Structures are given as structure tokens and as C-alpha cells.
Image (cartoon, rainbow, N blue to C red; front, top):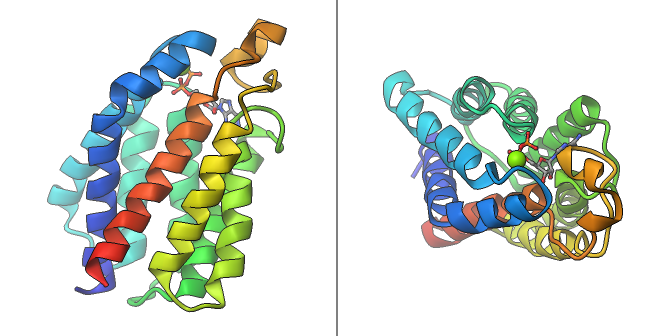
Length: 210
Ligand code: ADP
Ligand code: MG
């Protein structure tokens, strides 16, 4: 399978994960937000699948850009534009490459994190996507030297899972949950959780196809 097709398969699995986890993500968001995160993510990824059918992208970067546009235009909440920016930055990082190395994958993830931090101004400890994605990027960079793209995503997903769990005791400093003050403590952040699920979907897809 070429890298463009593999990237499309990854997005398909991400969409399936968001559909499957829709209720759980919405439950997490109803505890510390407005209860729409699962629906937002599902709507965005279903739109991404539709656009991929129509656009028939020719490089991995084109696939990610198509996803980005769908997320930015179809998802109303905070997370849509943030994830949209991440996919767009990752797309730019891959440029016109037709193959994606482990290093390229780690760099694309790092570019995505940079976009989210620039747009959302969150740091680790603020109880957001960044709590999962920043350790995921660190793990991805360490794993890149071992040479497998699947390994990069597997290690980043493991780190993101831990990062998402680390949000449980925190109070939020960004996003809707920050209005709750201390009442946000004791609940896992929905966005950090969806970040883990997206990386896990990528890892599962690539492990299966190699
Ligand atoms: P909304 O908060 O508008 O309802 P969602 O429910 O889709 O949007 O997404 C909520 C998630 O967005 C939060 O759980 C958090 O992880 C993430 N988030 C919110 N603000 C920021 C930010 N500034 N930086 C990073 N992530 C953020
Ligand atoms: Mg919400």
C-alpha cells in the first residue's frame, strides 16, 4: 500500500474510533463542558471521509489537508479548529513527500502540536489536548530513531494515554472547563482523551498494514 492510501486508511480508522467512542467522549464533556465533544469529533471525521471521497488526494499531505478543511468548517466547538490546525500543520510539514519515514511522522506530529499550542495558547497542565499531545510528540521523537512509522504512533499513543489520564486531578486553565474552577478536578479531559484515541487508531491501522 502506498503512503497516500495508508494515510487514508488511518483517517478511516480515526473516523471509526470517533463514531465508536462518541458517547463516551460526550459523557466526559458533559462532566466538565457542554456535552458535545463526541458529537463534534464524529461529525468532523464523517465530513472528512466524505471530502476524501470527492477530493481523491494524491499525497499524504493532501489527505491531511482535506481532513483539516473538514474539521475547521464542520466542527463548531473549540476542538474542531484546534485539531483542524494540527492536521493543516502536519500536512505542511509533509510537503510533497510521497513516502513518509518515521522521522517525517514524528515531525508532522510535532508540527501539529505547534499549531495547537499557537492557536490555543495552552501548556501542559492546563487540562487540554496539549496534556496528551505534548508527551506523545516527545515519545514519537524518541521512537523515530527505531525507524518504523507504526512504532512512532504506538509509542505516541501510549504516552498520550498516560497524558490523558494525568488530566484527571487537574483544574482547567483553558477552554470551557476553566469556568468550573476546582469542580473540574476528578474528571478526565475529553480533548486529551480524543487525542489518545486518534493516535491509537493510527497505530492500529499502521501495525495492521505493515
Ligand atoms: P467546546 O469546548 O467548544 O464545547 P469541544 O467540546 O469539542 O469544544 O472540545 C473540548 C476540548 O477542547 C477540551 O476537552 C480541551 O481538551 C480542548 N480545548 C479547549 N480549549 C483548548 C485550548 N485552548 N488548547 C487546547 N485544547 C483545548
Ligand atoms: Mg464541548
